[in-house]
Amino acid sequence: MIRIGTRGSKLALYQANKVSEKLKNIGYDVEIKIIKTTGDKILDKKLSDIGIGVFTKELDLALLNNEIDIAVHSLKDIPTVWNENLIIGAVLERDSYYDLLIWNKDKDFDEDSEIVIGTSSLRRRSFLKFIFKNAKFKLLRGNVDTRLRKLKEGLYDAIVLSEAGIIRLGIDLSDFKYKRLNILPAPAQGIIAVACKKDDKNLRKILEKINDEKTYLESTCERTALNEFGGGCSVPMGALAIYDEKDELLKLDAGVIINDKIKKACGEIKCKVKDINKAVELGKKIGKKLKE
Ligand SMILES: NCc1[nH]cc(CCC(=O)O)c1CC(=O)O
Image 1 (cartoon, rainbow, N blue to C red):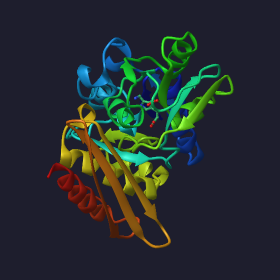
Image 2 (tube, helix red, strand yellow):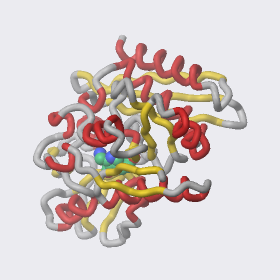
Image 3 (cartoon, rainbow, N blue to C red):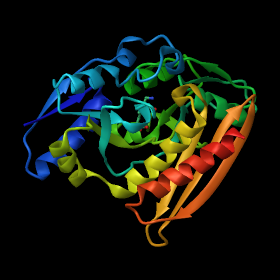
């Protein structure tokens, strides 16, 4: 029996169920345990103000205390410097990495409008300032349903959500208007990750069987760039790595906002899909470039 730990939100449960299905398909029994995290309890603050690992801490402890065997997370919620005894044992194939801007149907605005945009993410706010120069930003926390309800109630002119979250929840956006934003996603956005204890050799072997190698390579590259630049969720950094399997070429685009200016860096490296060291090398190089 593999005990899966997860947060209790609909999105988290969807993600845990997806991992559960994959494990069942290869012959394992699973059980899902719900654990509340600090990020679920504190709903009136920006994520960057609550601290690092707000969505993982309680699940990390449950892993270390052997109350669960694996924990399922959105990879973008796992800090790059995390816990030396834990490891990402598998990632699932990436879903959409786009951010969506969503607004009420009866509303019209353009890039010069003085609109109020709801988001709790420093990255989204910082990058969007360059598109909507006169926009004001208002805190928006809570699960995806709550956020859409607040938009409908008119508390915001528009809000930003990840397309992956919307698709996973099967949310019908036909009551709204929306478009994909042309901004760099959070490192590892749209990726479901499975964590386990580093010394749990048996479990790591099992997780290897459900791991998507291309996604693992890409997310390692993005997360290395974030780690090299430093700061985790408290820096407005976006990064997107894409591996072309035919050409065996890994490309990374990254950007940060510093003092209201966008700094961008990009690069590429030839490598095999299993060559994680090359992904680390490229991530470090681009992270360093951004720092200069
Ligand atoms: N910040 C919370 C969070 N963490 C992961 C997702 C969705 C899944 C993903 O983008 O990987 C979301 C919601 C959102 O950003 O709209």
